[in-house]
Length: 110
Length: 114
Image (cartoon, rainbow over all chains, first blue to last red; front, side, top):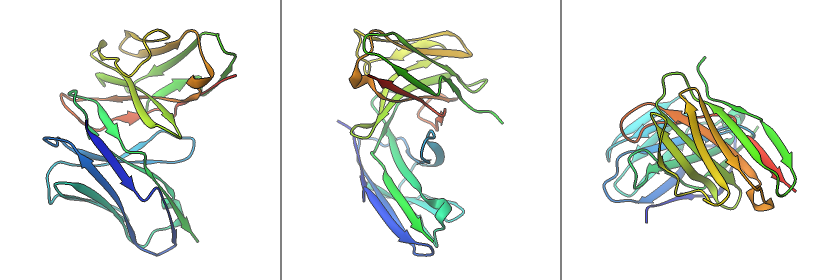
């Protein structure tokens, strides 16, 4: 069974303190890894898709990287507005569905 | 600004009552997904449609849940009868493509069954 595990469950950072979130997966024949951001009371918002090991994508203070077993979401010099839950997902057995991890709740303290 | 819309945003109902949630996908998107999110289980896929045809509803309790797409601009998720364990946030998402791809989520319906 495909599995997606995210760590840590929660992370508190001081503003400006860089760190990384981890998403490890067990799936045969990876067809993409997706990162989403979810703010309280809202639906997940798409951030990145990574398709092959070694690939990197960046958006503002976020950079996502992918290896054969895991993905990292690096946050450089975070600001309080980066506080959110970050979810990763991989395609499931079907052609279109995504299996989501339980997320990392990031809190950035001013 | 294209976005997925969901109604109602909040619903409180008593056990045994019927609940219907509605979703309007982004115009032109051909795949629609229904998810349920709880603290314990996270985001779980309930069902999804492509070009209005149901492709997979294995994540839904068949005896009480049903999902339909009467037309390309409306997807519905119905629970009858509702139970307290159905309390969760239900999200609709839509996407466009022929394989796994980014999905765009609505704001969700927060359901409380007492």
